[in-house]
Length: 480
Image 1 (cartoon, helix red, strand yellow):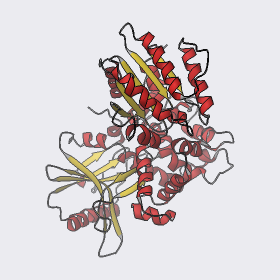
Image 2 (cartoon, rainbow, N blue to C red):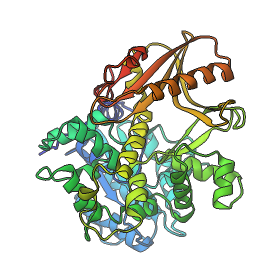
Image 3 (cartoon, rainbow, N blue to C red):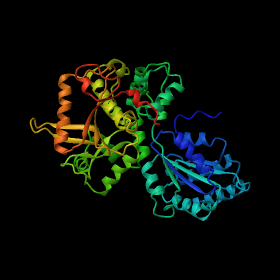
Image 4 (cartoon, rainbow, N blue to C red):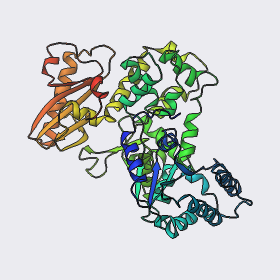
């Protein structure tokens, strides 16, 4: 029985399109651990895979070749002798596929966890390149899909390969985590009696990672689930942090150092500031590591209007919800198995929820633009930093949407489980930032005060001056 695939409409459309293109297609599918890459391919091509194999985590060359031989056997092509190397292995695969392709039907080959096969001195990538260049690329009905969680490896060795696979990928597909709407759809599909506030808070804890969501139990409250998965002795998410970065990177330690540094600076750091914090050089190697983290959807790079930072540098900010939750609440290794249930509504958790809501807004900018009814207008979004000359305090706006119609939405995100009360003091502080932004950037267009809240603003004399109000319902809407 084929399982329902939540979301992924465009990815499903494209995969089926590539399979029916009547030309050889080589698709590189990548994305972070647990995001659902394998599930997607197996469901789209259920009953249609001609050949599939998956790499063994930490297996040596002999073990990987054994896995290949076993995969051929499972596909109905037993071999008498295990190949000595990957050139022989792909020769066996070619003979097997030639038999299957005689009727002219589609031929779909899926190689999962591709980085695992690239063991020391295995020549796997060279053999794969030879297989594609010498034969597979000439087959009009062949679709080859390669997949891997080690995104940096996939980018370096497959997508941006400078050897035999140079410019051979016909399509690359970056599978991202669910958005809020897809997360809500997943929870409803599996019988969770949770409202949107609980779905939003679920996203704050684990983001839209399908595997993480699959560990939730609909018979428990969200708080009970968090205690069971994260804080109890055998919680399934307690050790995920190390596993995540070990899967993504062969040498995870310097990446974790970057993550921990960015966690301490919520608004982000420049490359030079990161280099200083982790005591390394701001060279090409650091730039490469930062780009790897961006490609893995762990951090984001964003531009800031600030002369001190420079227009070309920008900031790096930690955006992975699980990593933030782990570093905020789990790294101290509390032995209280009911930590979360007993800590609800404390200042620490309320502050974390506020910052998490800001990050959710930053990952749902298309939904915000749709709610603002500016989907058809060319826009640029960025942050702004400045200094108030009167108080010498830093002023910052995390999300500014600059539009081609010479208008700006200057956005403020505020989280509250009830309609948010905008006080006189807070309103005046916000308007002071608006004035400083206009003065220091010399922007001559119009500025639209915009508030993004979970449940709207309480009606007060100050809320009447907020021209645009966006709620979490807008963040849950499907992009039209």
